[in-house]
Image (cartoon, rainbow, N blue to C red; front, side, top):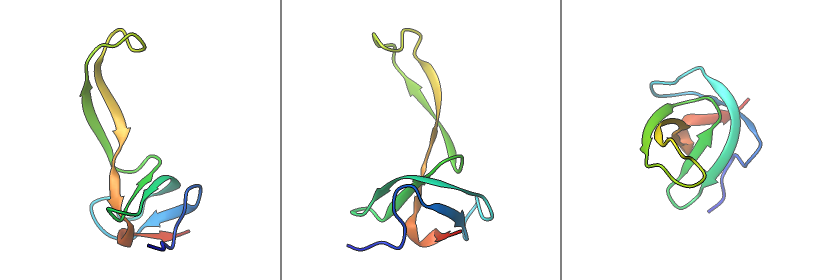
Length: 73
């Protein structure tokens, strides 16, 4: 499936709760038609302690946005 954005592109969100925000595309999931944009749609995720992350706790991550809700800036 061909998409209009690719990793590294600057995009602006044109629809949804995060309308008007912009950032760089970190990844594209063509199968689910989703993109992850840096600094947009922050979500919190509980993480168990591991050897790399001794404390665990809550991490803030960038969540996915449907590809139809973004356009190239």
